[in-house]
Length: 403
Image 1 (spheres, helix red, strand yellow):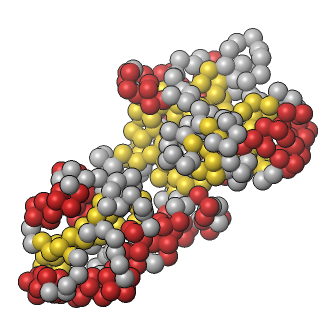
Image 2 (cartoon, rainbow, N blue to C red):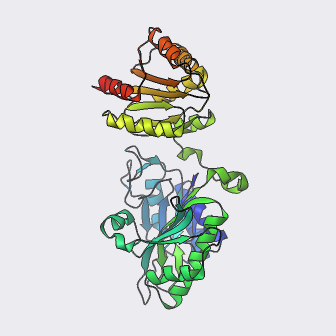
Image 3 (spheres, one colour):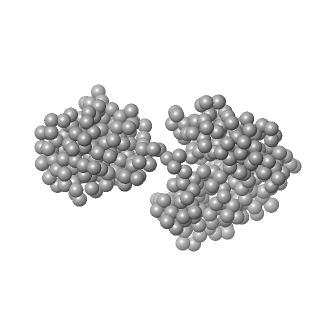
């Protein structure tokens, strides 16, 4: 589960991580009141107005309705309302959203932390996540923080560092010091960074996060180390232990079809292709997506109907796939181990008749228990459904209907 920046920062602060203070607002008028309160709390006279959506690259993103960016500096209280008005209610398009963008329902009014001083500020990148290859947590960090960390990884990979942590032992002092050293810090900033790293790792471990990404981590001109941003993903399997964090879920950020699938007990992920997939089992779903690409198509979704692919679940799956106007064909690939293939085939036929006219061709490949009976049911149904036995054969039929 993803949460917003302001929510992630509140969790970080609870574990002792120094953050860029801010107050969330739903309207331009609330944004002004938030700025006034922030001025009282921190003394800041400039304010950063930050769109709150589940996507990165907000600073370079554009609100389609107004042309505003997703992160804008208000150089004075009198500028806050107009800037917030140019962001709130609009659709912010970034490198991590689709062409429609995401609607901005909240903005974070944050303090200006790039204040002048004797030394310059520095921006770093830092994230904590699980390295599934080693079964260890890893802190990934770089002295080149900011919005273009992907470019840093591509062009100067030697500036990306990794510190692996045994979860049974935890983060060690020498590791935190090595991180501060590799970031080129010394003196008070070095001490502040080691403290920051310990607190960040404690937050990651303490809330069962699957990822914490801070970009940038800022060294201020007076050598403080603070989190200016916060991108957090929580392990959904652990939310039963964190009712307070589960309550942070923002349904408006969810894909409506994915939300519907979740409520129906189906595993669905929306993609950008033209061939809908209906499969039972995650591994088979991945293989099906691969075969679609090899056949010249692009998968439009990941959809795992599970082990009980009866008529009701198949119908729900059909309706979800057909909500995507880009779908030009549907490939059903079911292995009949727990469920009999003939029951799945009957479910496909019943669902087809219940929905009515389905405007795209359907390829059905059923293997396993009663596969021959299933093929016969499909072939004799009189519907515009193409049956296949081998996966290669199914891929060929996908190529034919897309041609």
